[in-house]
Amino acid sequence: VGRVRVVTGAGLLLVALLLLADPAGAQGACSATVNGVDAITYSSPGDALEVSEDEVLAIAADAPGPGAYDVKLEFAGIGWSVASDEYDGDSWADDVEVGDYADKGTGIYKAVATSTGTSSCSATAFFKITGVSPLSTLAGKAAAGAAVVGTAGSVLAAVRVAGKAAQAAAGASSSAPTTGVES
Amino acid sequence: VKLSVLSIVGGILGALGILGYLQQAGAVYPTMIVTIVAVVLGIVWGIALPTLLTRMRVRKAART
Image (cartoon, helix red, strand yellow):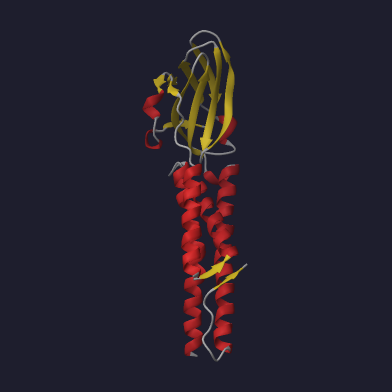
């Protein structure tokens, strides 16, 4: 019964999380460039544009206007705005200074530029901040700390649970219980 | 199956931490799906570890 509950619970959790994973939006695609190169060149993490921490990204897009644009960095489905404004005509351009974000995080990011004018469209590009040690950034330190604390915590908890079960097995003349929930 | 809430929470935290560090190192980009897989692996780790350790130590205790 316990195994059925665990498997059922894990299955339900997985389905719920997959339902939360919203696929790409239904917006149309903008024609956009990053440093003068078509953004579609950098449309996958493997093709990410490598930038240094002191670089400035020149982002430009053709979009139906007048309207507003918003450039977001995304990480694990969570995004935050790094540039936004209103524009007239059918295009806009803005600069994003990598150094403004390189002290907080490095590695691969996804940039999504969304234009909302007479109709909405978006363009996506991946870029990779290089030359910065992961352990020198806030995000890198937090990730390393979480990895160490989480792994050590799970091992200690497992050792404690196993120790209690072993004590019960040694102390009991009958068979030891091997199913239960510990906190 | 031996369940430990702390072990499962630790497994999830550890998996997300490793994923976050790999992203910071430029080795992987954590899409939503990759993040979900990491969470599931953390849960599996958090369940498998106390279960296996318990089996080993109970067998050892039974022998002595």
